[in-house]
Image (cartoon, rainbow, N blue to C red; front, side, top):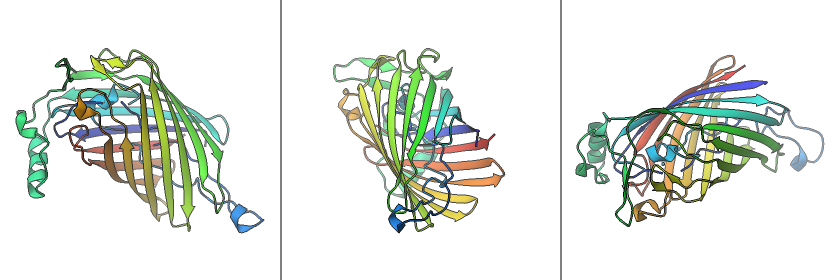
Amino acid sequence: MDSIVRLLVTLPLLAAGVLGPFQGLCAGDPLELTAGAEEGPWWSQSADNLSGRGLLDFQDPFPVAALHLQLPADPPETGRFRLSAWHALHDKFYVGAAWALHLRGRGVTDGLIDGFHDLFSLNDGDRDQRPENDYDISVTDDNGNNSEVDRGVGSGDVVLRTHWNAFRGTRLFSAVSLATQFSLPTSNTGFGSEGIDLGLNLTLTKEIGRRLYVYGSVGGTLLSDRTTEGLHYRKENYQFVAGVEVPVDPDVSLIFQGMILSPLLDSPRVLSQQRRYLLLGFRWMFAPGIELELSMIENLDPFKTTADFGFNAGFNFDL
């Protein structure tokens, strides 16, 4: 495997909220194909820990989670077109880059979301305080200062990445990989940061009985410029991800995933809470070297700091 090109389109559907930073540090990383068992004690024999399809490549879809190395809003509909690529310098070490085009505009799904909430008697997240399908991304801090993010289309920051499969694991121990990310201030005004954001991620991968793969990941980011579009972000951020991949056949896998992300801002208080999501999706290798990824994300309480739910579609090309 020399290079991988990834093309993804994300459509988040939002409940009322505010906006906030983070990129999915572990999702979409390349995985090494490993050999079968070797001679020696069973606990030291190799396993195919790195032959799974990996976690879903889904970043926080909350609109103001996209202004930094990955930001909150009232009920707009926003989209993101993201292109990324990996190139293998070594069979265990990869370098890559990613770029996103962001679209922010008037929504069309408020009626659908309200009907879903009514059907299951769910909280509406103060959606009735805003006109249906109206666009409004604004944050009022604890001092009464208001910041707004304008609608439009713009280029996001370019992100440079590395990925190292440090240890492929054994039948007893999980594989270990490390990833770094560096976002550069290359975006259009209002669609990214004016500083460099740094990210580091550690991921554990374990094959269980040749029937499923279990993933665990912890990562963090450091922001060099905390103020973006009048919003004051926390300098340090963290992210926890856990997931299970169930291979349906050699070409298809179902993936269940949970994400916990740190609060976006110190003020207002509504944003000083963790963000929590559940994800469900699948990956299908429908042609040699071409993989389709479809997934959806659903938020958990608190509802004011997260997207209500979102969809993700993309293709991976092995060149």
